[in-house]
Image 1 (cartoon, rainbow, N blue to C red):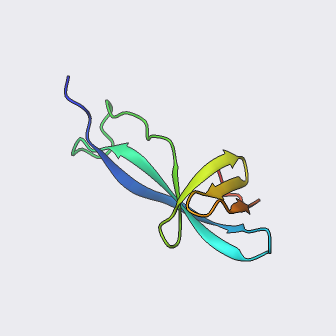
Image 2: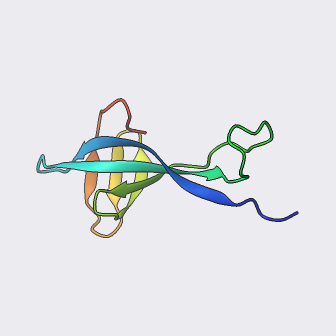
Amino acid sequence: MPATKTTMRHKSTFPAWDESGLEQTLHVYVDTPDDGHTGAPHAEAEGLPNLRTEEGYHVNYLEKGKYQVVATGEILTSNHPAAP
């Protein structure tokens, strides 16, 4: 069976803050099946969220409302409703 092609789709954006109180915008992306038919009944569910900073740095999910910027080790927090 051939591998399913996926497309990275922007799902949401939410604010997060570093330890000094500076706000950063985080973006949530998800892989979605790319079968050429939107809403196909056999389509698989979207993949795990992929978090990025506004500048494009990868962000690790630590727990609900707590994240770490991979490049810097900086910890960010958010209680925003859109935050995973």
